Image (tube, rainbow, N blue to C red; front, top):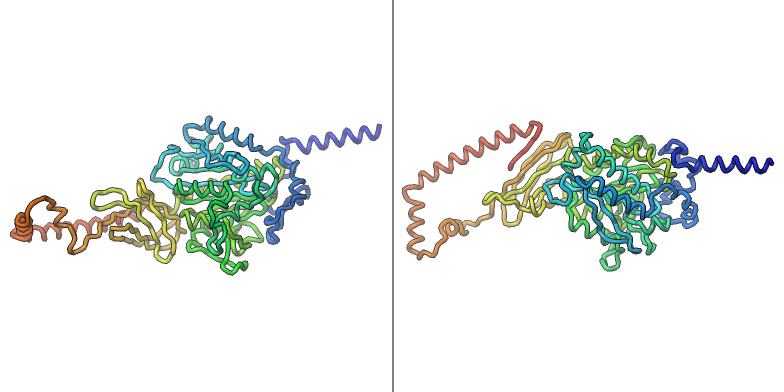
Length: 488
C-alpha cells in the first residue's frame, strides 16, 4: 500500500513539472538553475566549442515543447497565410538532409525592391541552440499582431525589409547536436580573412552556400544571429592574425559597439553582466574563431552583423521560452529599428539626367565602403551617433563629392548629385552640337558661341553661381531641423 501511494505521488509530481502550462522556475539569466546545469556552459571556458554526445543524449527530453522541423515549417506557412498583407514566405535552399531553409520577409511591400534598408535575423546556426528559432517566431507573430497598433512595429514594417530565417541548421536540431548532418560547424564554414580556409566553394556545406547566395541576391544593411550558452552581444572581429585572444577591432569598431549596446541595453539584464562590461564583447577578445559568418558578412556582403547569445542555457525548458522572449523582445525590435532611427541615408544621382547612380559611400578615417543599390541608388550607412563625419560619394566616370556632417541621435538624409568627368579636350561641344555637318558648319557654331554673346554667357554663369551659394546656405540651415535632409 505504501509503495503504491509513493508511486502515485511520484507520477503526479512528474506530470506537474512537465506540464507546459507551468513555468518551472522564473528564468534567471545569470544563474542557470540546478536542473539544467548539465547543459549550461561557463562563458570563459567556452565549452560551447565542444560537442559532447553524452550531453546531446541528455537533452533529448528537453526538446519537448519545442517545435520540430515539421512544426516549424507548418508555423511559417501558417504565418504567411495569416499575415499575407505584410509578409511573404520563401526558401533560400535546403540542408544536407533536404530540409527547406524557410525565410519570412516582413514589410509593407514584401518582395518588392524599395529604397529602404534590409535586415536579417538567423536562428539555430548551431543545432543544439534552439532558443533562437522559437524567439524569431515570437517576433514575427508580434509584428503581425501589432503593426497597426504599436508605433515601433509600424516603423519596422513600413520602413525596413525584415527577413527572418528561424533555422539555419535543421539537421543539427534533429540530431540534437551542434554541427550539421555532415558533422560540420556552420559557424566555421565561411571564407576567413586571415587564413585560407573554406576557399573552395564546392566544399562548403549547402547551408553555408545558401546563406552566401542569399546575400548575393539581397543587399542587407545589417543582421544578427541568435545563439545560446551565454548572455552577451558579440561584434567583429571574431579572429586575430596571430590566433591570440586579444581585442581586435574592425574599421567600424565604434559603430559595432553602438549596435551591440542597443541590444544589450534594451535587454532585461544583459547590460548588467559582471563578466562582460555593458553586456557586449569583441569576438576576438572573448575567444577567436575562424571561418565565422559574422566577419564574412561585414567583409564580403557589406552587412553589419552581430552574434547574439540570448540565453545562458543552450536548451532551457520550453516553459521558459515566453519569459526569454519577454527579456529579448525590445532588444530584437530596437536593433532592427535602429536602421532607420540612426545613421546616414540617401541616394546618389547624376547631375546630367538625374538618373540614379549605383555609386559608393565612404567615410574619412574608416576603411570601409558601402555600395548604393543598383535600382534606386540608395545607401544606408550605419554610424555611431555623437560624432562628426566626412562622407564621400564616388562613382566611376563622375567627380566625387563630399560633405562634413554632425550626426546626433537621429537619422540624417544625405543625397549626392555627381557631375560627369569631362576632359578639357573632351566632347562637350560635340555633344551639344552633334550633327553630320562639315568642318565649316562646326567652325561657324564655335564662332557664334565665342562672339557677341560671350558677355551674356558669363553673366548667366555668374547668376547661377550665386544661386547655388544661396541654395547651399539654405540647405545647411535646414540640415539642423528634424528631417535633416541635405543635398550635395
